Amino acid sequence: MRAHLGDQLVVESPATGGSRRDGEIVGLHHEDGTPPYDVHWSDTDEVTLVFPGPDAHVQHLEHGSRGSPDEPSRPSTDDSRQQAGAVSHTTPPDGAPNPGDIGRRVAVERRRQGLTQVETARRARMAPQYLAYLEERSAEPSLATLIRLAAALGTSVAALRGGGTDLPPGQGQALLDPQLHDLGPDACRAHLSTHGLGRVAVSTPDGPAVIPVNYEVVDDAIVFRTTPNSAPAAAVGTDVAFEVDHVDEAMSQGWSVLVVGPARAVTEPDAVRRLTERAHTTPWAGGERETWVSIQPTRLTGRRISAPDQ
Image 1: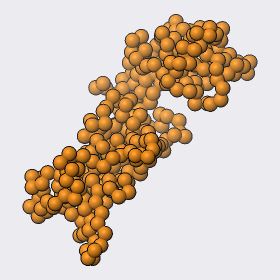
Image 2 (image 1 turned 180 degrees about the horizontal axis):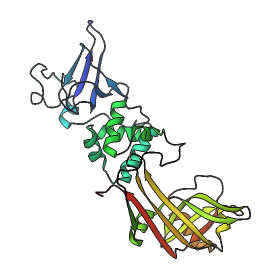
Image 3 (image 1 turned 90 degrees about the horizontal axis):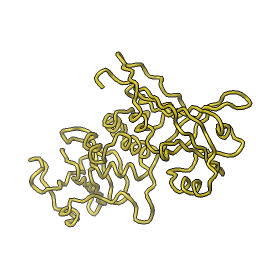
Image 4 (image 1 turned 45 degrees about the vertical axis):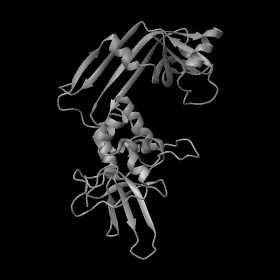
């Protein structure tokens, strides 16, 4: 048995009048198209790993052109679907997409690397519609699927599963011959991007403190929201350090950017309104955090650790 992405797997009960089940093959685990397959079932809208039995056959998308000699194509039960070359809908008609943890991590890593769903699916040998399904729905892909996705994204299965969420980064082995590069101002600004999660270092009555905050970049200034009398609010009126970094555990490489400059409170009503309207996210810490703090960079430096050939 051999199949291509988009073919249908049909399972028919050998008993007379028995039930019939069909689904679209959305993921291949072997380059030659042999089982097992990831199948998107038409009756449950679920994707499962299937090892076809003797009561199953492949219904090829293009009749007579892609089937193997020992597996002739069979008449379609949904001619309109075959003619359009379409796949099952990945989002239920009665609700909005509800991605699971794995789907969210796949989508974030894919976007971070600037990859489209089509390119990522090609690298992972799966249908783009299946990748969209994983990113939009709560699903449990097979281990083989996760391995292919991790390889396509240059990460690990554990990272996609969130296994290192509670562990500090950087526990992997160092590269054989790592290269340490200084980043110029333009590269630092590019890494800062427009928003994310960073750390502000301040002096408090209890001593130095480093606090993670959700930040935005507005007109080259670092801005974040906090509460009055909090540790981050102690930054106002002082020179502070603000740091952002990213670690690629799978490749033992990453970068960090350090911003140094004076911090001030943003109090003008129009400025506060503009910052609130332009904010990409609300603070992860939750609660009412309406005190905006702005850091104007006077020094911007960064470093990147990479493999020798990068």
